Length: 491
Image (cartoon, rainbow, N blue to C red; front, side):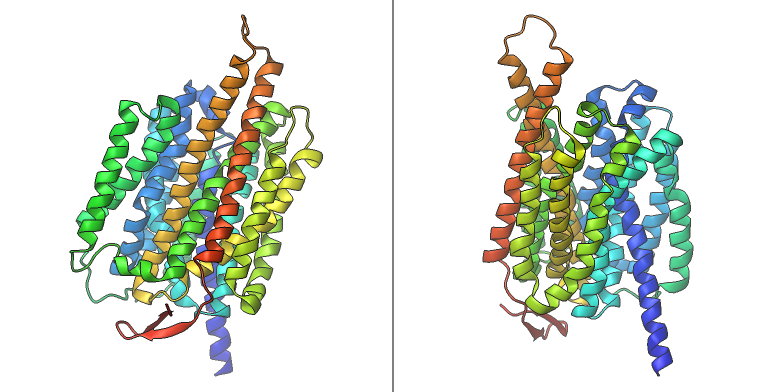
């Protein structure tokens, strides 16, 4: 009996390592291309506007299809959806690396994001049903949270190494052998029987409404800073988003098997945690983007040196994430989420004072250290809060909602803050009333001024998140829901 129990525990940890590796691939591909963008631009002779879409095409399709991917995992089997998503993610990664033009790469990045939208929520859903709710699951989710929050920093490091020594195409090729390993191992150790529903009726109208609504909203927010918030393009896509999302609410309240059962939002901690994730991602996605530009364009760092400079983040996140489950077990996730986002805000506030003639250890590293402690504690606790009390047959949906909040929050935050940065920099130069092209010194000062404003605004998101944790989340108490026999939060 003891040997069988030990073997089961070992198998569970192998499953967690495998799924964390898959999630690492997904998170990595959001940031790994940042350092390589200048090389891609030179290779394909792309404009700055076209270059942005290499990143945005991935995040838009990833965020837009996550709910569909999560629900598909519930209806058609988590293992099956996970394997299909991983296969196509690896295939499109190979195609990305073989791209012959910027347009081709952008389109393929969109398909890669679509594959990730099925791969990621099904992986997290498997974690939720593999580990019992409580401390065992919290420890597993701490590993998951560390991967999710530290993957972006590792992506910058690997992107710098691959770009400088192997070429930017290896930022995509690396996913192929990893994907093959994940698929072959999953076929051996993941259970075949994972569907928890008695039907497989996918709510296609709901899927169309939520996907078109989220993609239209994200596209409008990405383009609005460039084309203007009241431009015809922005207004059209905002209108499409509103119509689609209102239609979604109407549809979900009427169909027998909705894509997003609206009653799931009665789980107060799930709704609060998703709001927290959206706010934190909105502030944090910009950190890697702006800090990478600051270190390369202002401090003159090489791609590899820039990547190494971010290595401090995953190290501290790993330390924080491994200790958070014990803290959550003692005091609960609500107190942690009332404090940890404030650490993130503190780190961002420090970065809002970066000077033109700064240094890494004096002006950048202290902010990254404080921020990383907050990130490790925040993302682990949010994942625990968002998935506690969710029934097995809706675990994929809960996973999709959490991932959607992260990707949409990150895309929207980056779009808005990038627009603010460009506006502030342009206004800085305009106020000088120059009659000639601005010098490098003036351009650098304008850019840094824009970065400072973006960091300052981003720091406010953590304060709002802490308030959400204080007034929306509550200590978890459980009762049995007779509709499905699972424990759900007592209201």
